[in-house]
Length: 113
Length: 113
Image (cartoon, rainbow over all chains, first blue to last red; front, side, top):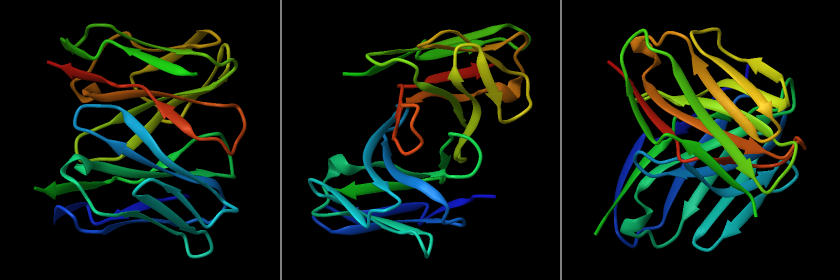
């Protein structure tokens, strides 16, 4: 059974720092991995999608990497800003079974001004 | 472009009352549709998904049901709400291909009192 874990659960950093959020999954049989951002009381906003054949994806100050064989992904945020404060979730889409996404419990990030 | 609409944004309902949450997608056809629930301090739990009109798969046996009366409409229902049904409900869609990303609505905060 696929399980997704995100560590740490919460993170507080001063503005300007570069930071790394971690996501691990137990079964490497996935189609892709997706990173989301969730602001309090809001829905999920898709940040980056990495296909299983890819190693990384970049969007602006965000860079996501994928090491499928070791079951890990990282989201790198460069030069963090207070506006980056949110909960970050990763999700994998397993190849086995149905078309569903399995989520981690998220990392709550707070960037201090 | 594609958009997803979910309503209402917030809902307070008494125990034992019925529930109907609606989700519609615009700008695409034959999407996969999903209902997730997010309880406080927990990850997203997949409740139902649908790959076509009238085709509903349930992931978790519970007090809720889902229906897909039209291609781009997904409804979450309950005949009698329980206190444990409180939570944040999110609708999502993806293209029918297995390697695509998911897009989420803004969510409904349901409080059962």
